[in-house]
Image 1 (cartoon, rainbow, N blue to C red):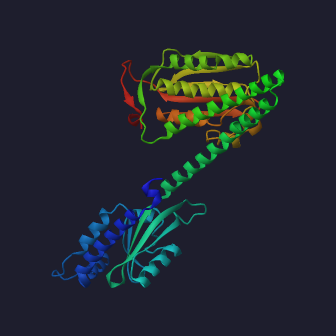
Image 2: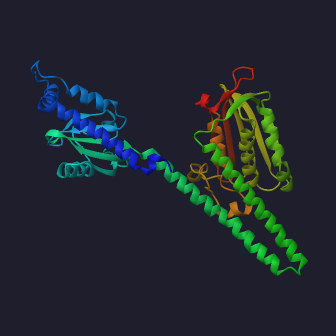
Image 3: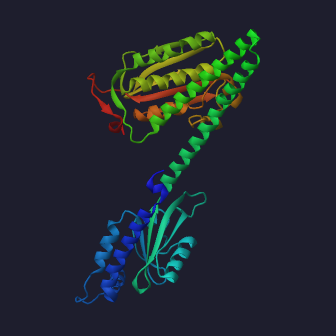
Length: 397
């Protein structure tokens, strides 16, 4: 867990140092500084002999990366950073959150800095986003209070996503591991029955394959989601990537009596990573074959349109309802849990496809209708020249 998520003492001490420096600056300025601040905001002339030291306070507040609000004796807002308005911390010159007001009141009473984690609605509209802030309220001279707020919403959401991912992985791993354990016990008990041993050994092989695929998908997805991992994108031929992906599913398709047919434009190029594109296409083909009737045909269509290469994988399977179509790219989401167990899906394939598309500056789209099949279309920017220019995925963003 990162330092931002731990909200460690070092960060809190840094905030206190900032507050202390502000306190010294304001204290040195004395009464004239805040009189200057109030008169400037009210457009009241002041004596030329009054030093504009409040400008130093304003400059220091402007240099802070955190959202900052300077409150007067009646909790009126004297100064506030622009983002304090956009994130809902300040409205109409006041602090709308009762929890923030309580924090400020405690700081006034205790005479020392008070801190608290508070969720604040961005606006007054029902269902508005709630942002999570780490707040510090510190009393200054003349009954002023400085409020510093750090938006930790994104970091917390990322942490929650990671926890969910770990929980899901643990749950998914338990199924094949538990099955292997039970099958091994059964084989041991039936050591004198060759037919039973062969039957359960075949089931063990199936579960071991499923476990291997799940582990590989977890590794692939974790690499794709790593924010500090750049993918080297080179000029590559779509034909080669499609051909290799089709070849990888050929045996599985033949075992079902199904076939894969490729058509459309040839000779197209994209800036991409060959291995990642093959992985994405293989996942789409596996998915199409898995959810289509045995003996059916899966079509792969390739075309270029308006500078984008589109690779469509079309099946005649069970289709996906609109409510499920919005979630099929989520990790471990399955439309039909029972059918997924039968077909051996890991629940990560489409999530991997989505992340591969994003790494290549593209996207993946879905059309589907229950009973009529599905079409997944991987869209990637086409190369603008025939030269083998090297890029990283950072260049595509």
